[in-house]
Amino acid sequence: MSPQLRYEKVRKEFPSPSGPVVALDDVSFEIGDGELFCLLGPSGCGKTTLLRCTAGLEELAGGRILYGGKDFSVVPPFRRNIGMVFQSYALYPHMSVFENVAYPLRVHKIPRKEIPSRVSEIMELVGLPEVMDRNPSQLSGGQQQRVALARALVYEPALLLLDEPLANLDAKLKVLMRAEIRRIQKTAGVTAIYVTHDQPEAMSLGDRLAIMDLGHVRQIGTPGEIYSAPDNQFVAGFIGEMNFLDGGVESCDDRSIRIRVGLRQKSLALRRPIERPEEVVIALRPQHLHVSRACGEGCFEGIAQVIQFLGVSVRYHVLISDYGTPFSVEVDMPVPVEGISEGDRVSIDFRDADALAYSNGERIA
Image 1 (cartoon, one colour):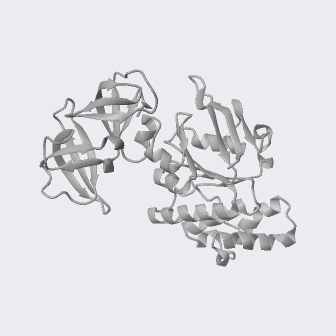
Image 2: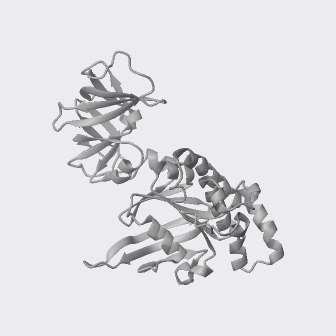
Image 3: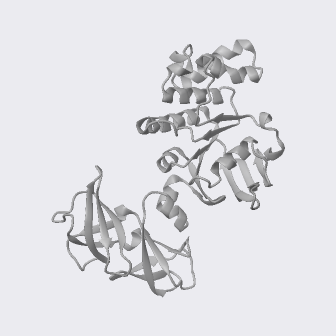
């Protein structure tokens, strides 16, 4: 996939009484032609600021945004040929759905005779050809969002920017609209940047994700790469659910590191040769841990405080208190473990291959 949009050391600052606040700190990455790219991160991480800089609604303090090899940063917003979809839909209440969707075509001075066919075509794409005579207030939230998407796509923009477009919808409708947005974007073939703080939303929608934190991009990858192999402890803790366990280093060579975790030693393959670290944090998804009744056979022993049936799995909340500061571990098993009830003493273990290891916040194994 050839790069269409490139960010080169993009920097954005906002003034404050105590001095400039850095919202984007030398952000650099590329987005491919036709890609659905998600910016994901907590509130205040800079994702919406980066979107607004792309649209030309914020002026850069440094760096460049290149589109098709040309400096986008010096192009006025109205000449960037960008479609935007907002959280609030921003539909004109006094216009019919047809007039809402046709409005950008009139602004772009598309010949009047072409407008009905262009509107009909895009409304077919979003699956709402029958509502064009209605008022936006007569539509459901999901229908209004699809109309907003049609309006953004009707004049064939070079880029589609979506800023938390599903935030106002209920949970079931969000799931439906995720699939609809991806279908519509791929059918239209437009390059899209999607901003959200919702992890399942980003993971189910994006071809790739950029995880942002405090104005920095912490990792870029496919949803599978981000989930299975987080590069640093921030991403590991932010994406999905993760248990973090302290480990003592027993030995370390060019290929592997041996770590004591509770009662057991575990050997993990190193990503690259490193000096022996002083401290290591082990990260494990709940589904990569195993709980059993047989005590003394795992890494840890603890008390099963809470057992929850989650449908696809059974979650065991286990309190570990025999190894220094007490901590809680979450374990997901596919079925209930026979003989374990709340309050029972249990063992927890894991396979070496399922563990990730971090030193000073960066992944080493």
